[in-house]
Amino acid sequence: MLKVEGLGKRYGEHWIFRNVSFDVAPGELVAVLGESGVGKSTLLNSLAALDTVQAGRIQLDSADVLSLDEEAQALWRRQEVGFVFQAFHVLPHLSVAQNVALPLLLLNTPGQEREARVQAMLQAVGLSGFDAREPRTLSGGQLQRVAIARALAHRPRLLLADEPTGNLDPETAERVIALLREQVHQLQSACVLVTHSMAAAAVADRVLHLRADGIAPA
Ligand SMILES: Nc1ncnc2c1ncn2[C@@H]1O[C@H](COP(=O)(O)OP(=O)(O)OP(=O)(O)O)[C@@H](O)[C@H]1O
Ligand SMILES: [Mg+2]
Image 1 (cartoon, helix red, strand yellow):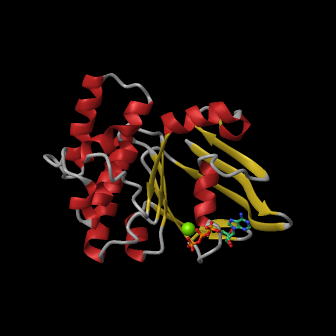
Image 2 (tube, rainbow, N blue to C red; image 1 turned 30 degrees about the horizontal axis):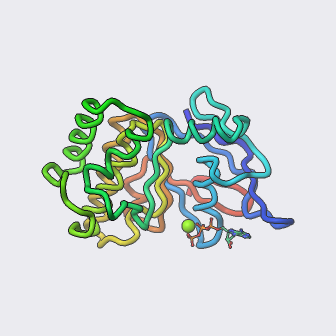
């Protein structure tokens, strides 16, 4: 469902990575490991067409992502991609429910359907009843679960997660990753998870190692 072929990224003359090829099946969670600075975040940004690449092809379902123009890419991203970042990016001035509803608002999802979806996602991440809470009143693990609920609210085909448990204690991190995997399986989304955590990698369906000259099973 996600097919990446010969992806290469360089700044000036210097290739960050090249010959990066891999597939992710529906409902599969693939963990990407690699040294600091090898280009893991750059790879995720490239998969979302947020970063330009100098070589390769990205196919998600029937979309040839890199051949779309910028406007079509923005629409594709809004509809088909969800993000979870280490730094949460939960908006502090919005309530928990408003944060989760955000991708649905951007897609003009009707109010009733939006509300139902927000409730379903909050329940899925164990935050029922947290609707009106302000993000600053939540713990790190709770915030991260809000971020996951938001990333999956619009049922994206592709979920990209960059160190989503970096700030969490090991037990909470394990629970958050298990939740992520459960949700990815349920929605049958393709998930690429960047992590330094072996525990997180252990929960993945497959582990790949990113190097400057390609990506391979770890
Ligand atoms: N605008 C830029 N110009 C030149 N080099 C850049 C630019 N942006 C990023 N880089 C380089 O690209 C490389 C990949 O960065 P990236 O953030 O993707 O690494 P990473 O694998 O995510 O590292 P970490 O594990 O520390 O998060 C780094 O060496 C970085 O210095
Ligand atoms: Mg990074």
